[in-house]
Image 1 (tube, rainbow, N blue to C red):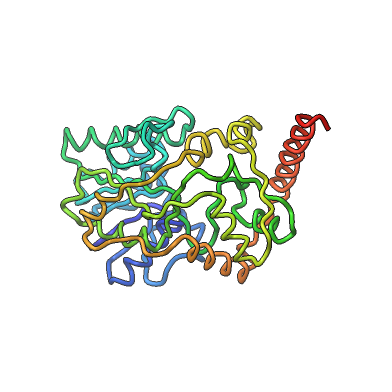
Image 2: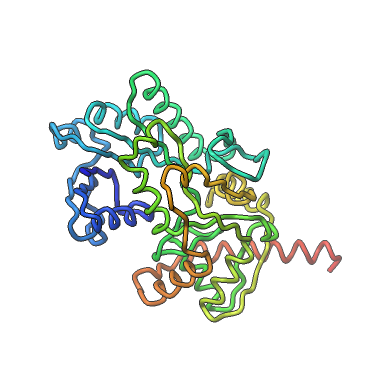
Length: 340
């Protein structure tokens, strides 16, 4: 297949890129060239700022592709631009939406593609919903060959999946565990969540590419494994060889700590909800696919990789100080409630 990825170096897209190249496909990444160090060997690169539509159109010239996938489309405006650039020039356009688009609060913890889309807590999710709506309209009215993919919490070897973290990734939480400091777990840590390793996601995603049965469809791709947040953090601590000091803090409280970290969207609009994904559809579209990397195995491998690579250990002193303030406020409130 001749494939164009817009983006292609992120958590999800890098794993897919590697898998396509291993299978011998013709893959081009359209990006600004800012992350050349993570490009897999054999990939073609088209250096271009997709936000400059005229320049992108000129660089693409008369090229056509079997599959185009945009990994950095976040708003309807991005997809309107993609539609103008690629209508009549691709056999399949894949939009990476999000499982955060599903209704919040959920009326049923079992989530499938039939679950309504509505998220009043997170603008990111609402923009993805609007993007899906635009593409469906173009599919219905003009047969623009779309496939919508909804990932949930996908991770790779570069960062562990967490509920509460800062802007610099996961390292500061790991460092707090290593240093014997308490780490914040939202709620009481017993809500159910699903982690999906990027390599598992990539196998399902590539099975949708060029798949006639996927045209016009929305498909979620996640592991079948449901775990609690307490279990996630316990696995991380075990991989570090350190005891876990949990500091459980209400998700509603975290959501009101200010705009410094958008926990209204990330928690109330997403990770604080218990979800169990029904993956029957992706398994029907890609026969034989199953997620095979268990959460504890995947996270343990990721922790080991982070410890072995100093460049993945980005400190975040602002987040560290924020955690200390929140935990201190929680402890004071507990003491006052006890009359201490």
